[in-house]
Image 1 (cartoon, rainbow, N blue to C red):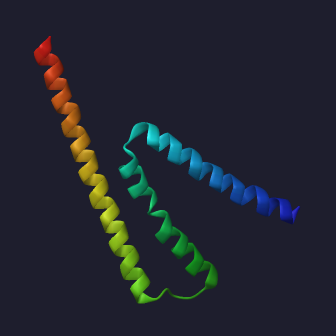
Image 2 (tube, rainbow, N blue to C red):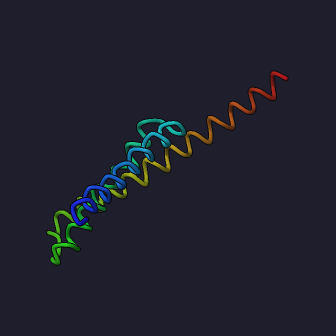
Length: 97
């Protein structure tokens, strides 16, 4: 049972990750989806550090902090551009009618 639990548990997590990836690709550009999913690296590092019971190296913390800030900035800019495109498409459509 313990071996099957280790097969089913991580398989379920990976299936969820891939399903989320494809669902997000249907709704957003691939660059934005990839950018957001890179947050998985700091999450994995945090879980590894917690499981190991130690503190991460400060350089790793700084690097992951920069990565997270970059993801949020890129996501915000992508969302802003998408909203502008949606607004401008709506104005063109109303102007044609």
